[in-house]
Image: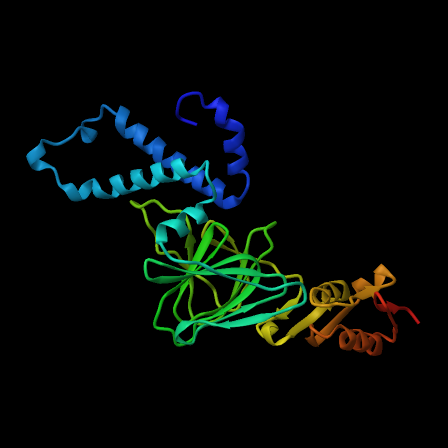
Amino acid sequence: MRGPDPDRHRAKFEKWRDASELNRAAFEQVAATFEGAEVLKTSADQRHRPLPRDRRDTRSWVPVALAASVAVTLVAGAAWGPLLSLQQQASGGRATTFATDHGSMRTVQLAQGASLALDSATEVRLENQDGDPVVTVVKGRAQLRFRGSTTEWLVRVGDSEMTSRNGIFDVSWRGEDAPSVQLYAGEARTRPVMQSAAYFVSGEPLPVGRAVRLARGRAEPLRPRYAADERDWPQGWVQYRSVPLSDLVHTVNGYAGKPIILSDPALGSLRISGRFRIVDPSAVALNLGRVFTLRITERPDGFYIDRP
Protein backbone atom coordinates (compact mmCIF):
# COMPACT_ATOMS: atom_id res chain seq x y z
CA MET A 1 0.00 0.00 0.00
CA ARG A 2 3.03 2.31 0.22
CA GLY A 3 4.51 1.29 -3.12
CA PRO A 4 3.66 2.27 -6.70
CA ASP A 5 0.08 1.84 -7.95
CA PRO A 6 -1.41 0.80 -4.56
CA ASP A 7 -5.02 0.88 -5.78
CA ARG A 8 -4.34 -2.12 -8.03
CA HIS A 9 -3.56 -4.23 -4.94
CA ARG A 10 -6.03 -2.66 -2.51
CA ALA A 11 -8.86 -5.19 -2.90
CA LYS A 12 -6.54 -8.18 -2.40
CA PHE A 13 -4.85 -6.49 0.56
CA GLU A 14 -8.11 -5.59 2.30
CA LYS A 15 -9.38 -9.15 1.81
CA TRP A 16 -6.22 -10.48 3.51
CA ARG A 17 -6.38 -7.89 6.31
CA ASP A 18 -10.03 -8.65 7.11
CA ALA A 19 -9.60 -12.43 6.98
CA SER A 20 -8.61 -12.65 10.64
CA GLU A 21 -7.90 -10.55 13.71
CA LEU A 22 -4.28 -11.75 13.63
CA ASN A 23 -3.80 -10.33 10.11
CA ARG A 24 -5.32 -7.02 11.18
CA ALA A 25 -3.03 -6.85 14.24
CA ALA A 26 0.00 -7.60 12.06
CA PHE A 27 -0.87 -4.78 9.67
CA GLU A 28 -1.44 -2.29 12.50
CA GLN A 29 1.93 -3.21 14.02
CA VAL A 30 3.69 -2.72 10.67
CA ALA A 31 1.90 0.58 10.04
CA ALA A 32 2.92 1.88 13.47
CA THR A 33 6.53 0.87 12.83
CA PHE A 34 6.67 2.71 9.51
CA GLU A 35 4.98 5.79 10.94
CA GLY A 36 7.61 5.92 13.67
CA ALA A 37 10.34 5.62 11.05
CA GLU A 38 8.84 8.51 9.07
CA VAL A 39 8.98 10.75 12.15
CA LEU A 40 12.65 9.98 12.63
CA LYS A 41 13.44 10.54 8.95
CA THR A 42 11.74 13.91 8.67
CA SER A 43 12.68 15.31 12.05
CA ALA A 44 15.09 18.26 12.05
CA ASP A 45 15.43 18.10 15.82
CA GLN A 46 19.06 18.15 16.97
CA ARG A 47 18.37 15.03 19.06
CA HIS A 48 17.75 12.98 15.90
CA ARG A 49 20.84 14.10 13.99
CA PRO A 50 23.47 11.35 13.61
CA LEU A 51 26.48 11.45 15.87
CA PRO A 52 29.99 11.54 14.40
CA ARG A 53 31.04 8.06 13.30
CA ASP A 54 33.60 7.62 16.08
CA ARG A 55 30.98 8.41 18.77
CA ARG A 56 28.21 6.07 17.62
CA ASP A 57 27.19 3.15 19.81
CA THR A 58 26.17 0.29 17.55
CA ARG A 59 23.99 -1.18 20.29
CA SER A 60 21.57 1.75 20.02
CA TRP A 61 20.47 0.97 16.48
CA VAL A 62 20.31 -2.83 16.66
CA PRO A 63 16.68 -2.98 17.99
CA VAL A 64 15.57 -0.46 15.36
CA ALA A 65 17.24 -2.46 12.60
CA LEU A 66 15.57 -5.64 13.84
CA ALA A 67 12.18 -3.97 14.00
CA ALA A 68 12.61 -2.64 10.47
CA SER A 69 13.61 -6.04 9.13
CA VAL A 70 10.57 -7.65 10.79
CA ALA A 71 8.31 -4.97 9.35
CA VAL A 72 9.69 -5.46 5.83
CA THR A 73 9.26 -9.23 6.13
CA LEU A 74 5.64 -8.84 7.24
CA VAL A 75 4.81 -6.45 4.43
CA ALA A 76 6.40 -8.75 1.87
CA GLY A 77 4.47 -11.72 3.26
CA ALA A 78 1.13 -9.97 3.55
CA ALA A 79 0.09 -10.91 0.03
CA TRP A 80 0.93 -14.58 0.50
CA GLY A 81 -0.76 -15.73 3.70
CA PRO A 82 -1.44 -15.30 7.42
CA LEU A 83 1.30 -14.46 9.88
CA LEU A 84 1.16 -17.89 11.50
CA SER A 85 2.24 -19.47 8.20
CA LEU A 86 5.23 -17.15 8.06
CA GLN A 87 6.17 -17.98 11.63
CA GLN A 88 5.99 -21.69 10.94
CA GLN A 89 8.13 -21.44 7.81
CA ALA A 90 10.71 -19.30 9.59
CA SER A 91 11.01 -21.74 12.48
CA GLY A 92 12.09 -24.63 10.29
CA GLY A 93 10.03 -26.94 12.55
CA ARG A 94 7.39 -29.38 11.39
CA ALA A 95 3.92 -28.83 12.82
CA THR A 96 1.66 -31.67 13.98
CA THR A 97 -2.10 -31.10 13.94
CA PHE A 98 -4.49 -32.79 16.37
CA ALA A 99 -8.24 -32.59 15.80
CA THR A 100 -11.51 -34.02 17.09
CA ASP A 101 -14.90 -34.40 15.44
CA HIS A 102 -18.25 -33.37 16.89
CA GLY A 103 -18.97 -35.45 19.98
CA SER A 104 -15.46 -36.78 20.55
CA MET A 105 -12.62 -35.89 22.94
CA ARG A 106 -8.93 -36.72 22.87
CA THR A 107 -5.98 -36.46 25.27
CA VAL A 108 -2.41 -36.24 23.95
CA GLN A 109 0.64 -36.80 26.15
CA LEU A 110 3.35 -34.23 25.49
CA ALA A 111 6.99 -34.02 26.56
CA GLN A 112 8.08 -33.85 30.22
CA GLY A 113 4.76 -35.06 31.59
CA ALA A 114 2.67 -32.30 29.98
CA SER A 115 -0.68 -33.17 28.41
CA LEU A 116 -3.15 -31.66 25.97
CA ALA A 117 -6.89 -32.44 26.04
CA LEU A 118 -9.06 -31.60 23.02
CA ASP A 119 -12.78 -30.94 23.41
CA SER A 120 -15.42 -31.72 20.79
CA ALA A 121 -14.82 -30.11 17.36
CA THR A 122 -11.38 -28.79 18.27
CA GLU A 123 -8.16 -28.32 16.27
CA VAL A 124 -4.75 -27.71 17.83
CA ARG A 125 -1.31 -27.42 16.22
CA LEU A 126 1.92 -28.45 17.95
CA GLU A 127 5.29 -27.36 16.60
CA ASN A 128 8.84 -26.57 17.62
CA GLN A 129 10.15 -23.07 17.02
CA ASP A 130 13.81 -22.41 17.67
CA GLY A 131 13.93 -25.31 20.12
CA ASP A 132 10.84 -24.24 22.11
CA PRO A 133 7.46 -26.07 22.06
CA VAL A 134 4.55 -24.01 20.72
CA VAL A 135 0.87 -24.99 20.97
CA THR A 136 -1.62 -23.10 18.77
CA VAL A 137 -5.35 -23.46 19.42
CA VAL A 138 -6.89 -23.05 15.97
CA LYS A 139 -10.49 -23.57 17.07
CA GLY A 140 -12.53 -25.17 19.85
CA ARG A 141 -11.43 -25.77 23.44
CA ALA A 142 -8.24 -27.31 24.78
CA GLN A 143 -6.95 -27.95 28.28
CA LEU A 144 -3.19 -27.66 28.86
CA ARG A 145 -1.51 -29.31 31.84
CA PHE A 146 2.11 -28.39 32.44
CA ARG A 147 2.49 -29.68 36.00
CA GLY A 148 6.16 -30.41 36.79
CA SER A 149 7.47 -29.30 33.39
CA THR A 150 10.96 -27.82 33.29
CA THR A 151 10.24 -26.29 29.88
CA GLU A 152 8.44 -22.99 29.36
CA TRP A 153 5.57 -23.72 26.98
CA LEU A 154 4.12 -21.17 24.59
CA VAL A 155 0.38 -21.34 23.83
CA ARG A 156 -1.10 -19.17 21.06
CA VAL A 157 -4.73 -18.34 20.35
CA GLY A 158 -5.88 -15.56 18.04
CA ASP A 159 -3.73 -12.45 18.54
CA SER A 160 -2.61 -13.46 22.06
CA GLU A 161 -0.18 -15.96 23.53
CA MET A 162 0.54 -17.40 26.98
CA THR A 163 3.66 -18.74 28.62
CA SER A 164 3.64 -21.29 31.45
CA ARG A 165 5.79 -23.92 33.16
CA ASN A 166 3.32 -25.32 35.70
CA GLY A 167 -0.13 -24.07 34.72
CA ILE A 168 -3.37 -25.97 34.23
CA PHE A 169 -5.78 -23.96 32.10
CA ASP A 170 -8.48 -24.05 29.43
CA VAL A 171 -8.21 -22.12 26.17
CA SER A 172 -11.43 -21.61 24.18
CA TRP A 173 -11.95 -20.00 20.79
CA ARG A 174 -14.78 -20.50 18.34
CA GLY A 175 -13.45 -17.91 15.89
CA GLU A 176 -16.36 -15.50 16.31
CA ASP A 177 -15.72 -13.73 19.60
CA ALA A 178 -12.45 -13.08 21.40
CA PRO A 179 -10.77 -16.19 22.85
CA SER A 180 -11.17 -16.96 26.55
CA VAL A 181 -8.87 -18.58 29.12
CA GLN A 182 -9.41 -19.97 32.61
CA LEU A 183 -6.42 -20.78 34.78
CA TYR A 184 -7.21 -23.50 37.34
CA ALA A 185 -3.81 -23.92 39.02
CA GLY A 186 -0.18 -22.85 38.71
CA GLU A 187 0.95 -19.73 36.86
CA ALA A 188 0.64 -18.38 33.32
CA ARG A 189 1.22 -15.03 31.66
CA THR A 190 -0.43 -13.50 28.60
CA ARG A 191 0.97 -11.07 26.01
CA PRO A 192 0.31 -10.05 22.39
CA VAL A 193 1.61 -12.28 19.58
CA MET A 194 2.80 -9.21 17.67
CA GLN A 195 5.35 -7.08 19.51
CA SER A 196 7.96 -4.56 18.55
CA ALA A 197 11.54 -5.79 18.86
CA ALA A 198 12.37 -2.51 20.58
CA TYR A 199 9.47 -2.60 23.08
CA PHE A 200 9.03 -6.28 23.99
CA VAL A 201 6.91 -6.99 27.09
CA SER A 202 6.83 -10.23 29.08
CA GLY A 203 3.08 -9.98 29.66
CA GLU A 204 0.67 -9.93 32.59
CA PRO A 205 -0.20 -12.82 34.93
CA LEU A 206 -3.52 -14.60 34.50
CA PRO A 207 -5.80 -14.71 37.56
CA VAL A 208 -6.41 -18.15 39.09
CA GLY A 209 -9.98 -19.46 39.09
CA ARG A 210 -11.54 -16.69 36.99
CA ALA A 211 -12.32 -16.81 33.28
CA VAL A 212 -10.95 -13.93 31.19
CA ARG A 213 -11.26 -12.79 27.59
CA LEU A 214 -8.03 -12.15 25.67
CA ALA A 215 -7.64 -9.10 23.45
CA ARG A 216 -4.14 -8.63 21.97
CA GLY A 217 -2.50 -10.05 25.05
CA ARG A 218 -4.66 -8.18 27.55
CA ALA A 219 -6.82 -10.15 30.00
CA GLU A 220 -10.33 -8.74 30.40
CA PRO A 221 -12.65 -10.22 33.09
CA LEU A 222 -15.64 -12.25 31.92
CA ARG A 223 -18.93 -12.02 33.79
CA PRO A 224 -20.36 -15.56 33.85
CA ARG A 225 -24.10 -16.14 33.59
CA TYR A 226 -23.90 -18.85 36.27
CA ALA A 227 -21.32 -20.48 38.54
CA ALA A 228 -19.41 -23.28 36.82
CA ASP A 229 -16.51 -25.62 37.51
CA GLU A 230 -15.53 -27.21 34.20
CA ARG A 231 -11.99 -28.35 34.94
CA ASP A 232 -13.04 -32.02 34.66
CA TRP A 233 -14.58 -31.76 31.20
CA PRO A 234 -11.80 -33.97 29.71
CA GLN A 235 -13.30 -36.76 31.86
CA GLY A 236 -16.82 -35.86 30.71
CA TRP A 237 -17.97 -34.08 33.89
CA VAL A 238 -18.94 -30.49 34.73
CA GLN A 239 -20.43 -28.89 37.82
CA TYR A 240 -22.92 -26.03 37.54
CA ARG A 241 -24.88 -23.95 40.01
CA SER A 242 -28.20 -22.46 38.94
CA VAL A 243 -27.59 -23.11 35.25
CA PRO A 244 -30.53 -22.50 32.86
CA LEU A 245 -31.77 -25.68 31.19
CA SER A 246 -31.20 -24.07 27.78
CA ASP A 247 -27.49 -23.65 28.55
CA LEU A 248 -27.12 -27.15 29.99
CA VAL A 249 -28.87 -28.70 26.99
CA HIS A 250 -26.69 -26.70 24.60
CA THR A 251 -23.54 -27.99 26.34
CA VAL A 252 -24.71 -31.61 26.34
CA ASN A 253 -25.78 -31.48 22.70
CA GLY A 254 -22.23 -30.51 21.79
CA TYR A 255 -21.34 -34.17 22.37
CA ALA A 256 -24.61 -35.92 21.58
CA GLY A 257 -25.26 -38.15 18.62
CA LYS A 258 -28.91 -38.02 19.67
CA PRO A 259 -29.61 -34.54 21.13
CA ILE A 260 -31.89 -33.37 23.92
CA ILE A 261 -34.83 -31.32 22.58
CA LEU A 262 -36.99 -29.04 24.72
CA SER A 263 -40.45 -29.29 23.16
CA ASP A 264 -41.48 -26.12 24.98
CA PRO A 265 -38.75 -23.44 24.70
CA ALA A 266 -40.05 -21.90 27.97
CA LEU A 267 -38.54 -24.90 29.78
CA GLY A 268 -35.12 -23.46 28.97
CA SER A 269 -35.55 -20.79 31.69
CA LEU A 270 -35.74 -23.38 34.49
CA ARG A 271 -32.55 -23.56 36.54
CA ILE A 272 -30.76 -26.52 38.07
CA SER A 273 -27.58 -27.17 40.07
CA GLY A 274 -25.43 -30.28 40.22
CA ARG A 275 -22.67 -32.36 38.66
CA PHE A 276 -23.52 -33.50 35.15
CA ARG A 277 -22.19 -36.24 32.86
CA ILE A 278 -22.25 -34.09 29.73
CA VAL A 279 -21.21 -36.93 27.39
CA ASP A 280 -24.32 -38.96 28.35
CA PRO A 281 -27.41 -37.10 27.04
CA SER A 282 -29.83 -39.90 27.98
CA ALA A 283 -28.76 -39.78 31.65
CA VAL A 284 -29.00 -35.97 31.72
CA ALA A 285 -32.46 -36.05 30.15
CA LEU A 286 -33.70 -38.66 32.66
CA ASN A 287 -32.35 -36.64 35.61
CA LEU A 288 -34.05 -33.49 34.34
CA GLY A 289 -37.30 -35.42 34.05
CA ARG A 290 -37.06 -36.61 37.65
CA VAL A 291 -36.10 -33.23 39.12
CA PHE A 292 -38.78 -31.19 37.33
CA THR A 293 -41.41 -33.94 36.87
CA LEU A 294 -41.20 -33.73 33.10
CA ARG A 295 -41.99 -36.34 30.47
CA ILE A 296 -39.01 -37.80 28.57
CA THR A 297 -39.64 -39.44 25.20
CA GLU A 298 -36.87 -41.06 23.18
CA ARG A 299 -37.38 -40.81 19.43
CA PRO A 300 -35.05 -41.60 16.52
CA ASP A 301 -33.97 -37.95 16.27
CA GLY A 302 -33.51 -37.17 19.98
CA PHE A 303 -34.64 -37.17 23.60
CA TYR A 304 -37.73 -34.96 23.82
CA ILE A 305 -38.56 -33.20 27.11
CA ASP A 306 -42.21 -32.16 27.54
CA ARG A 307 -44.45 -30.95 30.32
CA PRO A 308 -46.52 -33.77 31.87
